[in-house]
Length: 299
Image (cartoon, rainbow, N blue to C red; front, top):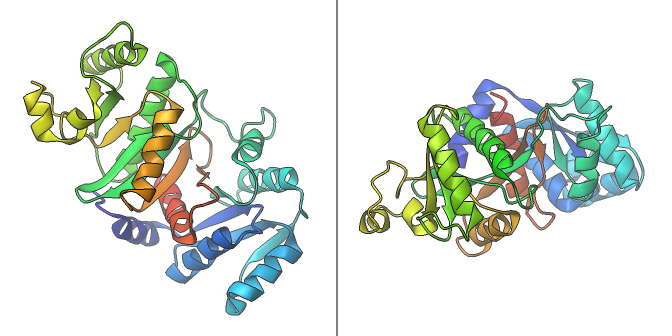
């Protein structure tokens, strides 16, 4: 089982060298990611966007790499860059898409287009991986589904479990996070959690062990779980945290980055090819790690 991002990069390099298309690549951080991925031998990148701006940035940032990338000129039109990026993946010329300057909503609109997009599931979701001292942990969904219903949460779980399997964990422990560990009719997330946990008990959601509802402390700390009388194998040992809504996931993810200083990566699952939608504030290393996670999710 992969324990950290260095192991993840090594595994991807040993298995396959991929190609990433960057939608609206005229920003420093995504070009830095493309350069890092090339240096690392992880992936090649196709740069889609404002060719003049991209070339100027490459000359400024890394003149030695100015002629190292295929550039497809769509001008400053972010919608055109998103559509062209999707078309390249559909044509088999790239393995995944990394968001550049284009907004997430613009890129996802192109990805989810009924006629020309990449959707294969009713529910797509963002899976965040973070490098915890005890190994790589996953959290979902802090990026796409605003207030998921029961069926949406099941799909979110399945997407996260698929990522865990691709990271070498055959039976990840999934915690359904709420404010408390007991079912409370006034907290719909606790009811959903209890129903999903029972479905897992009855083998309706295979490939993982699910427990919920669990408060965050009971999911990650064995002592807290013991004190609360939780005897499930998930209590205190969760590999995947499923949050009740996008606000919780967004706050969780940003605290990992800005308070805990953990290395993180994201991948959107539920499409024909992984989609990478890191924050535009994320640095080049984080976006390169997203490339690695996206490629790993295809192994």
